[in-house]
Image 1 (tube, one colour):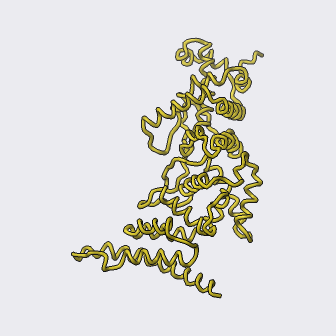
Image 2 (cartoon, helix red, strand yellow):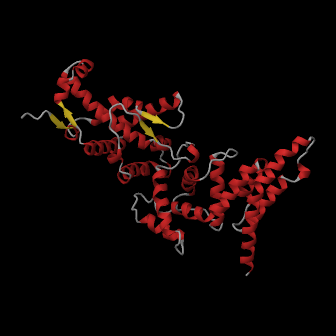
Length: 374
């Protein structure tokens, strides 16, 4: 019996994938469903970037080609000659029998490319491929391939014709963000899983770093990185871990997180990605208190941000006592300028809301002072 189907993965080995991608990438882009709002300028920038990359960036083309082979191989699709010849609708649309076969190939490649693009542009990180600072381009390429494999994207991808493919965002409170560190969501997942294993270790930071090193990530990601690169990771970490604040943007919030972690590290800059995770979970209570103060006492936001990022000199009871002092000073009745009875209500609400936070901070500060005095 005549075999009227050919394995698509075998066919892809014999064609110029780069040229087919240039023909079909707009079709792939059209299938992406972003969780964040996008402007026409965003789309134009993305199209221009992909055109340049597909034409002149062979490193990018190679990782995409490998990803397409993996996805198509997992789905076990075939070029169905019988289908192309029997379905009058497909022939009518394509025009010729040969065009109908070409259309099958284009559909498969564009579908696989859409899956890869949804992964590559998760948290709007695609354009970071062009960034040469901090070896980010090299990290992007290696982490793209590694995350495809470890997250089993090929095995879990949906290759249904014309189906929309969601581009995920990992921000808390459903707040999308633009990633500043390549594939930070993948690193975050790795270290978050390891965190539960080392939380009871004698030295959690060291134990977590040892686990991270065992991942064998390429290009020194588990080694000392420049401070600015770490701060970029802290930005993404903050977006993925911390509650969204109405009164402070993510830049300001990540500055608070980094400043507190630096204080915890004896006022020394962080240089390992694993430190961000291990230090954060040891400072989580204090950071939650700061975010609670910012949320419940909006008039104190400026002073709290300035204190934590510029004035605080040490981690411990004094840090908590000084933050309480900042808030109490802002809430002092003599500073309110009340002229009507109705003016009291917002102040009373803030006092009631912030009281349990302050009580908790004073309790821990008292315990800390007692422990230090022994």
